[in-house]
Image (cartoon, rainbow, N blue to C red; front, side, top):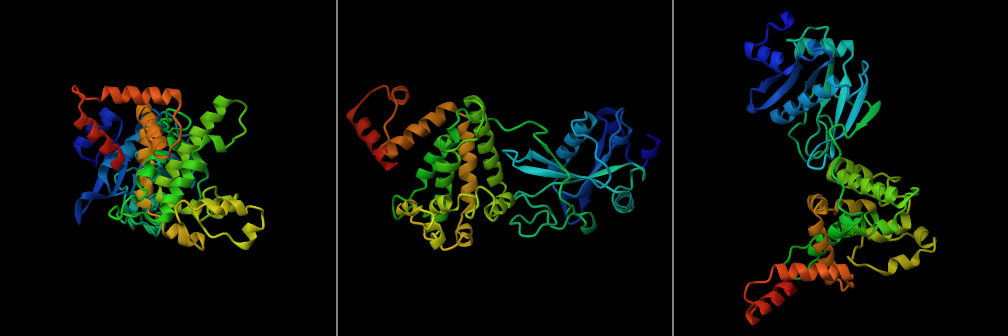
Length: 391
């Protein structure tokens, strides 16, 4: 510990008790935020690992991340990095683990620069891994265009991690839960989309692009009956569908990744994707003469959401991302609850005049009886009918 005698006795005690301490340099303009933070103690543990440096401003988030990463390095859950290597750790932040982290093992020149300016309480020869945490829209501090500006410019330009990752790590601290059934996400999304359909002039109108996009996800991307992954058996096929759907929700909750996939021609969710004619129909983008020449004219005879967009760009610009993210998050959360998922599926079928199965009728009746009042009256029945129609 002799090399760390410049730190406080409290920090030395943390190192002795927990294996490390986190040094936080406070922002003079806002005492609630950090200018930068770094670990001390990893390099002198029984299994020495690099120290960690981060410029993310929010103290609780960065402290949690640096401690978690330090433990994963010590336990060898993360294979050692080499100087200059960039690793992307996917699925670690956010309610559905939709945000990744970037790790970079600093080169000797970068390490010296950091010791001169930021990590001066470390031994200058101690290796350092820089950690980049994105904002709540998925953008790193050097990336333009984020609607969340709270981390912009915090990482020094010289240390901005712009290199493509050399490797990826997935589910480092556990994967999100699977929905209770293979079609749970579809059923919940169908129901939630029906709630946002306008039923009166007073109800807030949602953009056709927003409704059509959510409708497309439910009826195409989340519908197990219309996809095929070529797996050898039904169980593996269902698990793959679970994984694909959860991954899609994670992507669309990360605004940066969602916009990238919608503006990339070879991505599944792109309006100019592989199934161009089919997707143009669902997205409501006007078909081109080339599309109609593919024998897909029948796809354009239905227009549930009265979309009328000339280009994919117009369509994307009219998306209400706040609503999309809210609905997808809610659909996923509800998909973990079997009872709620069953009720939503029944409600959607009743709204749309779809015949219920015998099991669904039994569930609906039992749910109805469990909620009836102690005294069954005509007035209560009239109110029940009014409440059903008010939906």
